[in-house]
Image (tube, rainbow, N blue to C red):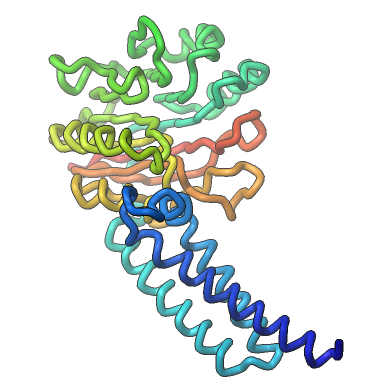
Length: 317
């Protein structure tokens, strides 16, 4: 086989892969979960930036190898869709309000249910973070280690059994709705009012959502989350493991239904090994005068398959 033939086949493969990456980065967000392709769409729509980036690279390589017209066409199409994608995200997000005075420092970390070998290191890292509020997901097996944080965080949501979330605070906590209680979803959803020392109270909702392709279960969960969020007035911070990026179909629907806003530049949290090139499936949102002033990853080396989030929130007047 001649070099020319190999080159043409390589170009053809690159163009096909570029087109597939373009489709993977744009089509899934329009596909309903209960459609035949719904499950794969929910897997892919959180990876739209990675798919579009891959498609652009492949198109450029194909153009450099000789397919100038086809490669350039795919590159322009990919850039156009990336621009549309960026505009959609910009409309649902806010930049950091770095000029505002933070009222609280909040840590969220999915510790991973069987990660008990690193419990001591996680507790030490949480203490060093100087967070005012610490939220651990998948924390049931990890709870005995939390006794070491009792002096630092005297306020806690009481949990009798099977509570996946642990919420610890330096500031007083109270249920956002005394009739509902602070916990729901078998301990995977918590909603409380936080009263900082030198700032107005704000509501905090912490959630560990099901994976978005669990058809038959996520619809009811999404509806209850929207209802609980929309029942809250005033400054609100929502944080948790959403198993989906802010630009995914389910999270966009949540944002549109509640008026929440994501950070303009979310922190990639999964998988840990991907670092800054990962997917931001752990998220923090604000509404009602609450603004993020700082956001960074936490706990890359603490044995979880997630990075955590360390956020500072300000409460506007």
